[in-house]
Image 1 (cartoon, rainbow, N blue to C red):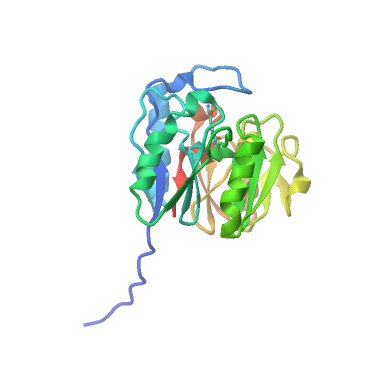
Image 2: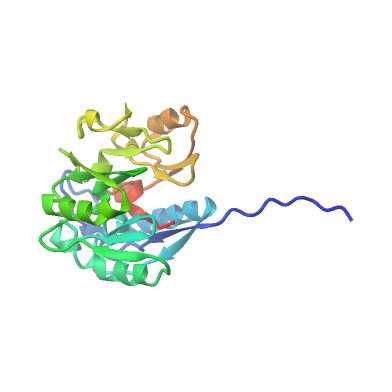
Length: 263
Ligand code: CIR
């Protein structure tokens, strides 16, 4: 018979997600006025977000639901991964500290990870941590304090990372002000962070467009509420997948914060 060459299937990757809480609508707000959240729509948007990850080669691992912790869906804030090193955070908002236990249990169950923790009086939200190769930008925000940055720097120094603190003004987290493309250039809003902090910086036309998730080296996940930025980024040679996350955006969440890409 004829033998056909079959290329090996690419390995699937792993992302943590956490189903929206029953009281999602009561999540913390810092910069936005409270707007009614359609919880049924939020659940559908979350399902679609997970489906987009799965379609793009990721397996999703669900952290146990925390039905009473309104912001628990924003799982990115609870743990940050640096290769095989997981750093459990200590969220700046007191209402969010209870989220860590469930995330910790899930992280401990993943083979091959070593685990470190941010401890009191340090505070750090994962949304403030932006990795670009061996450089780790950490937002000095209303959620992440100097002690949190100091602890993260001490944890990462032996692993060869350089930690750079970045003042954030008028945005909840660093990653609500800037993220990076796979080529290492930073995209963001120059009103919220000083572009001079970064190597290459591209200002984007929409606030919801500052956040991108790397689905692969050439594919990005973006919010459907930033069509001009999606256009701009696809013009730079990237494939863009969009998801509608309007209900989470009403709670100051962005596309990065709904998952943690483990490996
Ligand atoms: C909060 O204020 O903590 C939540 N309502 C939103 C958190 C969004 N997290 C993120 O962008 N990393």
